Length: 138
Image 1: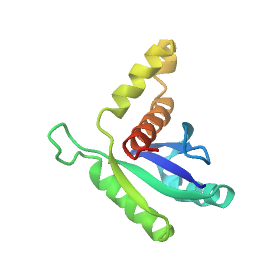
Image 2: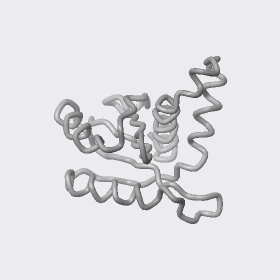
Image 3: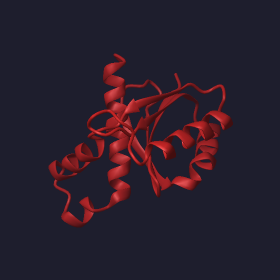
């Protein structure tokens, strides 16, 4: 089986998580500069088979778009342009950053480690992927 790749896209940084080939476990893969997303995906997809990409859809509490929504829509268009045969799904990413920070606290990470926004983004992508897998019955 191929992997599912999750993207937590941001203005500066993008957190990326991936499943194992059997799609049982989600793990953080990397945090990259957002401008490097397409080259990163091209390189990764040459090394590993990817079945699907999911990307977080930023929404406010009331379901309206956030300031980041246009950036994510542009990223989605770029991904679809460069990977037209690869299915792409958007998923609700509300609460994932908060959940990532809570998870870091529960893991006993020190305050300076919890301030590492790159790590927060990677953990948020992992949480998003785990939730997606749970909803999809994987």
